[in-house]
Image 1: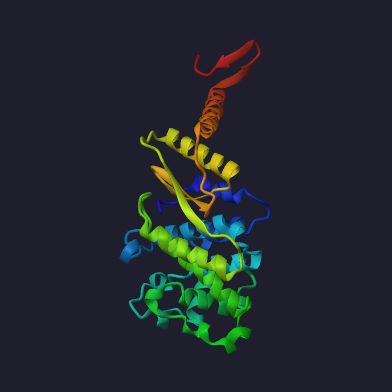
Image 2: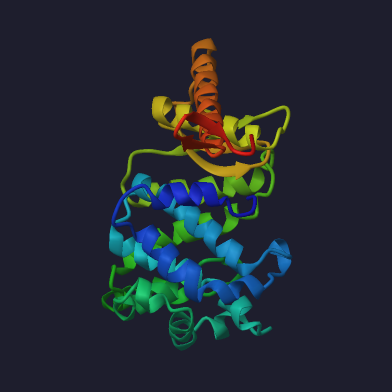
Length: 301
């Protein structure tokens, strides 16, 4: 996935008040999480800051939240766990992941990042957070404690729910590796995790990706066109714009409900683009006009 798109993050913040995501941005992303900007990742995410990776993942989870049925507590647990899920990279220690992703180290990292302000009840759910971190990647072969049924009382959300949420952790983690619109393998892995989560949660819906691409990129105009297309598809066809790239957007559509875009759709999209440009032009123009006793005065004239 491309670098952070602050415009779309701002859109999520403004969705509703109060907002778990707004609290996350205010109390975590803009505060304690800042040191992660200096932590560069290795492996498949090499060169990307840990800060960018974490916010990309939380952004994906927030976009999915209302569609996958997460309550506020589950969102707090999931966002906290995803924030510290790469604790080996945060600690910059070349040791086995299982030895680093301990309850004690995770608790210390939550405190160090100031996530306690975002999630005051974190201690009640520390076992949940720890298991989500330990199990987020199949590569590390950690998190086997989740298969011990008698440990269910240790989990604030319950072991069954933690096992379900782990699919969303893995989905958000893997899709951040999908750096181009045409990449399909990692998007397929993401869909696998998402759809298993939905099945395990008893939700009778499955998703697939639908993409749109612009043949030319023209700076600000490209963003305006992307947003107009995404807004039209979201409002008319209930698509979920999820992954934003310079040349297009990958959206989620319910299986069996992929829309066929016709001339009427194209006309409505074009109208949205025209309206946005008109508003932007009017706003910019007003910045150069000041009231004058004798009428309109253009600055500098």
